[in-house]
Image 1 (cartoon, rainbow, N blue to C red):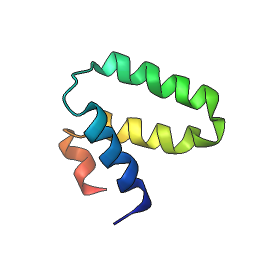
Image 2: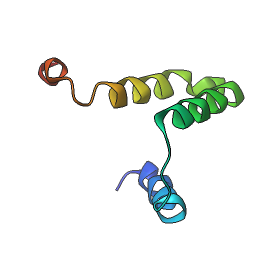
Image 3: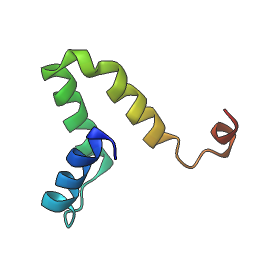
Image 4: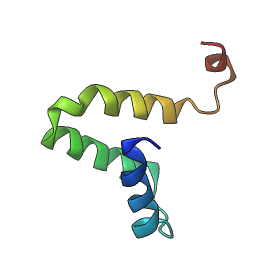
Length: 61
């Protein structure tokens, strides 16, 4: 189990029944990076990964 799993599990437990838009998620990520600039690169990587989940071409990288 990774350390991040605890945060993911808490997110799922507290907000798992909610529905959000990607527009809302993008705004929350921007706010998080504004408050925590050291996390800019990991948040950018997560956002890019989420954006490209269905891209078949990226599966080969």
